[in-house]
Image (cartoon, rainbow, N blue to C red; front, top):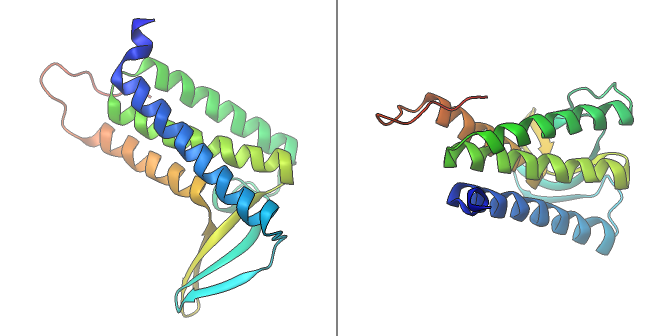
Length: 165
């Protein structure tokens, strides 16, 4: 029980749950409250639109050719592997990165169950160049990966063990 009270566990749990709640709340408001169904576009700036696009792949449309059941299986396996890493690693940075990734991935998995695809809203572009359309969960997943890379590459203090995947 004492291990569960470690700050790295508590802070990472809070962060992962916050990401999940924030993304779910955003989608609830936009889709269920305002009734967006896809194709809506609000131009915010000359380089940014707020839209609703349904993503049938994994992050940034990857693996779009897989069946929904296969995509869900891949996502569940990835989340289980991350959860094992999260539990075994002692580093706060690693646990925060994994919590961000799991919170975002879990919210996107919930989209697949509820809507059959992931709801993406943020579209950045410049001229003919168009960046992927993404959501809050995707931002959390990407930030989580950045934290994990930073944790692996940063110099470790004398007795600190390097992060293990």
